[in-house]
Amino acid sequence: MIENSETSVLYNAQCPVCQVEVDHYARYVGEAGLPIWFDDLNTDALQRWGIDADTAARSLYVQRGGVIVSGVPAFLLLWSQMPRYRLLARIVGLPGIRQIASAAYDHVFAPALYRRHRRRQGKRSAAGA
Image (cartoon, rainbow, N blue to C red; front, side):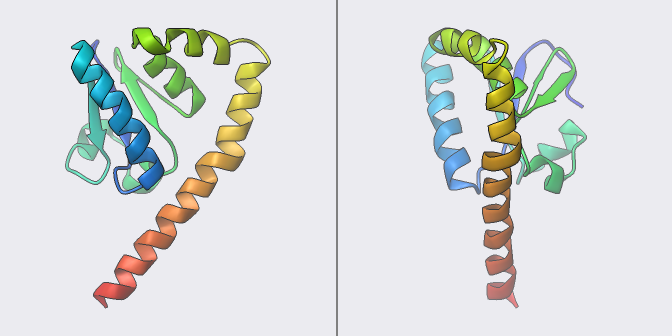
């Protein structure tokens, strides 16, 4: 597990949707000089997180102050660290909205992205066989 007060993001760079979104955040973070780091789960960075690759591929993970969160709480933590996204974090974090967003992410969006990830892995395995 990463132990510091900086914000770190663990994401799947092989997921086209995840990569586009995180690349957008990374550009903004770089331009703003914010202390947020992005780790691709497909690299040796995964070892520092203490999460296996399959678990990591199922959701976005964010760490701050030694605490790791995933799903909508991870987005809220990430957005709260970026001035441009703080209002979005406040809105999505409101009671009711947070529960709806979490249900949609946990039961629709994240599973759909994970299924696509598994299909891509299967195609790569078949191509290499």
